[in-house]
Length: 255
Image 1: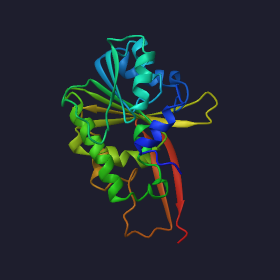
Image 2 (image 1 turned 180 degrees about the vertical axis):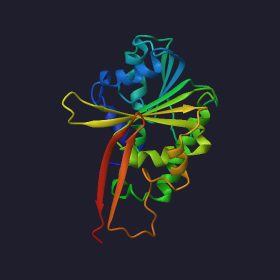
Image 3 (image 1 turned 60 degrees about the vertical axis):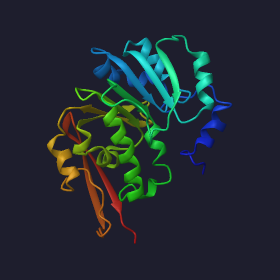
C-alpha cells in the first residue's frame, strides 16, 4: 500500500493529476456548509490539504469567504493550481506541513479540510477501537495547531471525513481545544456512500456527552481500554439533532 503520509507520494501523483475530488462532487456539501458559511461569510479561510480539488474556487464563488489560503504538503500541485486560478488576489496556494504550521494564532475565521486528516489514519483502520499512542499524539498535534490558528471568538474548524463519529469523536473531544462539536451526515444521491462533516466552533463549550467522553465515562462514544476483554461491544451513535437516531455497531471478539 502506498504511504499517503509521504510527500513523495503526492508529488508523484500530482505530476499527472490536474483535478480530483475526494468524496465526489462538492455540491453535496453545500447544504451543510450553507448552514455555517452562507449567512456569515468568513473574512479569511484556511483550506488544509487542498490538493487538486476545486473546493476553494467553489467556496469563493458561493461567497463563503473573502480570502482563501490553500495549503498542501506537495510542492508539485502548487504552481499548477496558481496557474489555473481566476481570482489572483483572493485565492493563493502555499506549501505547508499541517504537522508544523508556521501560521498566526487566533487568526482564521474558518479552517476546512476534506479527507486530509483521513490520510493519517491509513494503516490504522484495524485498530480504531484501540488506537496507538503514536496515532493519538500525531492527531493531537495537528488539532492543537488548528485550534490555535482559529479565532477564539467563534472560529470554526470544518472537517470532512469518511470516518464514523464513534471513531473520530474521541480524537476531537478535548477541553483544551476550546470548541464544541457538531456532526452532519452526507451521502450521494443513491446513498451508496456516506461521509461526515464535523463542525467545531471555537469558544463554545463541549456538550455533556463529549465532556464525559474525554473523561472516559461516555456510554455513546469511547475507545476500548487495552486491558478490557469483551465478547461484544455495542456503541450507540446518537445524532446531535435527533436523539431517536440510533446506529448499533456490534464488534465480535474472536480471540
